[in-house]
Image (cartoon, rainbow, N blue to C red; front, side):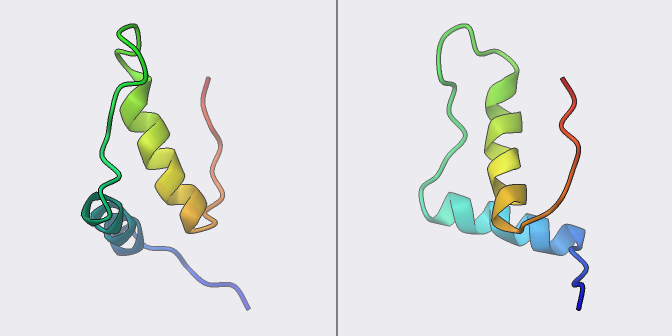
Length: 55
């Protein structure tokens, strides 16, 4: 059986991550763009959400 992931599920994972102290942090001074994308990608991975990563 397939389950549908909603925006509410994704939002919940974001909230849970923040509550657990997993904040959005830049990896280096040169990381101006991807720190949020990497953090958000981890939330999608937690939900086993299939997506296509753009390069």
